[in-house]
Length: 139
Image (cartoon, rainbow, N blue to C red; front, side, top):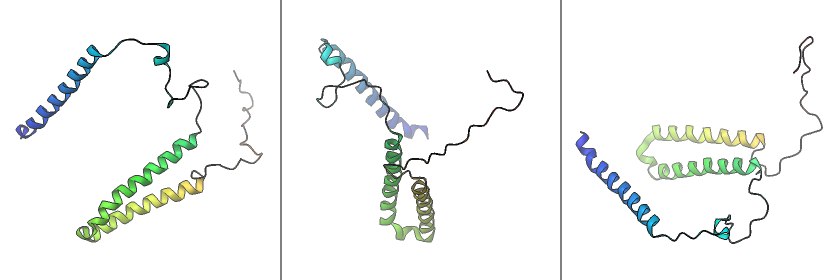
């Protein structure tokens, strides 16, 4: 049974060897003349301004994750729709459960405001900070 995987293993070995040999040959023939301009950060031809350590708004990542989740849904839903007749009621039920779970996730994200680009400011009330218990020492 393992003989069947020998071709795959040989192919992977030859592919890995090809990559290593080409990287080695490239390191031998590439020019080595670094300069300050070549070592600087490349930003699409623009001169970098300011430091590179800036804080991004977390909404960029949340919206990207939401997009990926629903993009994967479409990627899985389209092939299923093409062969939906072959699956019968079992396939229909499985995909219905899948769609309901994703719709629940969408409703949750919508209710939490994760789909809003500009979230409303919280009211002046903040969560109360609990006072230390009587007799406890702080510090």
